[in-house]
Image 1 (cartoon, rainbow, N blue to C red):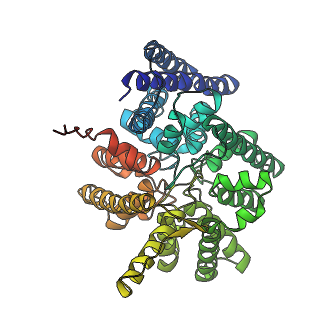
Image 2 (cartoon, helix red, strand yellow):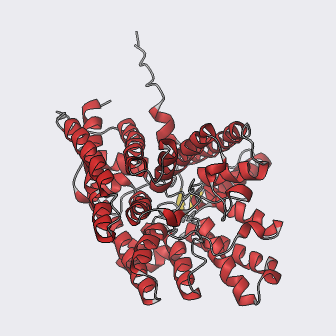
Length: 482
């Protein structure tokens, strides 16, 4: 393990966060709410620690696969612990654990909150809270890589693989740095487009910026207690569309830029993503038709909520906790499925579901015809057994973590539906669940230990389990061959 290189990159990450802290400082100076000192103090602490770590100059700048996982895991933990300091120092979230919960929820683009009155926060805190969504959506390491090279010997790709969501991560172009810049270029372009459309619809400037951050990162932190319910139909429709767009694999947008339409049409994941989302919208629209004044209104709210939970954004226009059981079950299912690999969305990912189904079909075929040889294909290409195995292990660990989390949280004095949906919502980086943690509720009802479980679940969900587990695993000892 290249420890010096790990510390060096962690130092760069902390210096980057120190620089980002200046943005809420600027916001506070505009609104004159006098919380900027807490951000300056945090930025100073980050700058000192980051400077010390970057003085550890590595002789070897190569990052190995294990190093990439360690850097990503430690990096996200450190950024969250330091990122929570302003909330705690300015007193708007007086409990440090609650501040960490809120910050982890922001960086992991979960959107779960312990706040009972969001509108009581200062503009600087609201901005930082939503901005963590935008940074965490595409990935903190990817963000830094888009600005400067971090490693040699293929190390940048190891960082991208450790941080990017999905069962397999490749490069769009030969250089990983160029790939990071292309991804962030697309990310920024879509964000700017949504921001402009929200302004055209009459949304206030500050709301347009923060909701764009939340939509682009598929996070869901809002600036109003009513989430998105107070905005007009046009604005809600714009957010619905962009939540769905940010849930698409960003490789698709790269193919559009390159004019490779045939390759887009071959994408099984994109087709499945659209079919699942539309099917859920239609079923829920029919199920809730009597809850609204017209079929259009039912379709509008169904489309918004399905787009929100499937992309794991978490915004809401209505309290879907009051919908019929069929609609709530469908919502839970699409929560778990999640968005596409290579998007800013969370969940298991559509590609993993497809791979698991294809592998199950292959195994059934093998039971019927033991001598037959069949392969799993995705988008017309053979899938390596390593990818299939990784998918199976991920799904196994996902179920184990979900079961253990539910068991631990059940010791708290909260109902079963809240516990179950809360674990699903945090592990899949969605935010709101059902009952106590529904669209109109929050996670303040839980004790400190349950909050710690949810914090770990949010990190496991965003980093897709493996990086966090490898952080605590021991390197296997090599055996001498005599």
